[in-house]
Image (cartoon, rainbow, N blue to C red; front, side, top):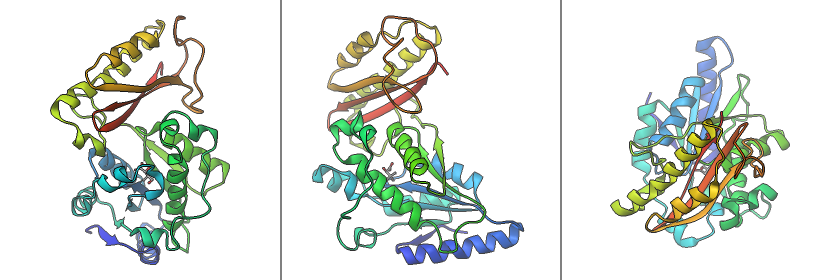
Length: 301
Ligand code: PAF
């Protein structure tokens, strides 16, 4: 069945309820629902999220909505790529049932919401430090998408939502929101998809020139170096890795942090001079030309 485009919340709820009823009847058990929230400009990383959702659920909805609340810079919002036809074709090729692509008015009919979800202290670190309000905006729309994705009849079979591990901080915050506020949904993190040159896929990579892309490869190179040091239980010596990143032409390092994988609090011990032990997550962010890039890798797992 081809992917159906729906643009209204009422249309989404009705179509999802119909599909869940039909799939429950044919499976002889309550059907499960998977939601894949995206901002469109879909690439192979999103396809991996959608494929995981299709593999694990009877009915799958992908949302495509460029959420103004999570953009601090109006120019960044204006130039964010919008590729609705290609997005629909990609979701169709993966077997997604519904593409929910609402307008801003449909999502925020009274203008920007007065009441928002607060990401708290974790929302002010790392990405949040250079993008104030970003995570409040992202969590607010995720909360709303999780609600509007549910049909009025609910899902007896179960409800899962899929997020990329590339946005490690977003994934950690969504998990905390769902746990702290008792959302009836299971959050699934899907591994990062990389191009052949090891650069993590991102909708923003298209804005890199060939030379900037070459420079950007220092991000995955830094992560691989840390992985090797962690595997060998050597000191991570973050200063030397930071110096390597800074020496790449046109790369402005924002942060390189080694953090607890669950809480994302900085791991002060065993990260610099002393041998590395245990498990951690390395987070890196840098600006390369017009683009801000993020990447991460688990260490010592
Ligand atoms: O990761 C994204 O693309 C967005 O932050 C999300 C989760 C779709 C919310 O707008």
